[in-house]
Amino acid sequence: MIRRIIGPVVFGAFGIAVLVSLGVWQLQRMAWKETVLAQIDARIGAAPVALPAAPDPVADRFLPVVVAGQLTGDELDVLVSRKEVGPGFRVISAFETDTGRRVLVDRGFLRDEARGLPREAVGLEVTGNLVWPQEVDGFTPAPDAAKGIWFARDLPAMAEALKTEAVLIVARSMTGDGIDPMPVDSSAIPNDHLNYAITWFLLALVWAGMTGLLLWRMRRKVE
Image (cartoon, rainbow, N blue to C red; front, side, top):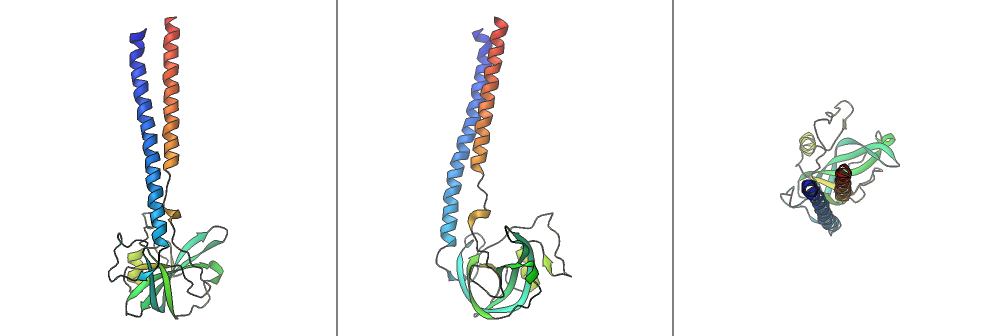
């Protein structure tokens, strides 16, 4: 009897050990991700600095900046939806800085019914964060040129359309025209490691139960 159960016991113990170790690894990943998110939030909320001469998509991601200049009136509207508000648009504007650079400013959310209202091309100071959105995939529709509506923030394409640098500042300060800033935060960065850990631990429990059932049935046959 002992010889017969050695194989199932070893196999069961090995499976449980592997599944539990995967669960523990996910808990470790969760702790690491929480540290990273805390660092991102701290950087987002830091004191703004001048816009770098050549912003780097990796080193300068979420960098808080402040720029002074003029809205040019050249804009794109990106279709979005906000909880408890409904559909609307992110207003992406070309912005000419006092130093002569042309960059993009994500001014924030504009309700659908306000889209047709006139917008002023005014001088202002913008405080915000540098972002390089990755929202475009194979299922993203092409912009509707007739209606002037985009369906994702495609930074290279928007920069080409508005003849600016491929630099996007997501404003956290008001820019007027009833547009509500949509500041950057870390909420959009997934942290599902706890769910993964629970899944692995539950699988380990199931594996243990199946191993126990197999041993019980083997014992019954002997009896």
